Length: 122
Image 1 (cartoon, rainbow, N blue to C red):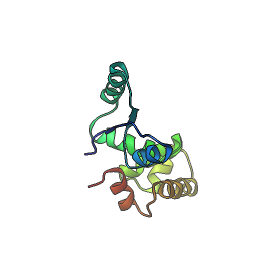
Image 2: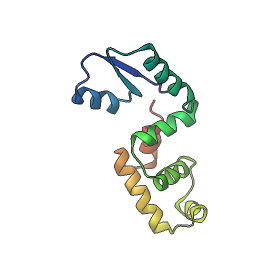
Image 3: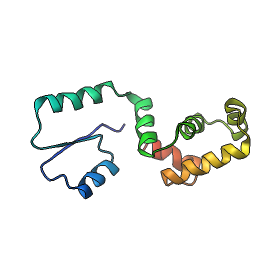
């Protein structure tokens, strides 16, 4: 299960910040910081969803999916067919296939299995 990571650095140039966030860091605190800054970050982490739902939501947020794409992604993870998703969302199967393609592209995967492992890495 992914554990939220807070990166603390005195050398937070833009390249390092992007690299840390792209590797899954939840927050970056630059030195010097106050105790209230650290407390605020820890409170945010505490309030974020936990467990599998938290892992799913963090991965979807990191992929910068639209609200509709997040909805479709959650249905994909439930194992629903395109036809079932179309019925639930009120969209055509063609539209859902386009959403799925976009989701896969944004996540850098090419199948449901790869998408599942993107969301829940082992």
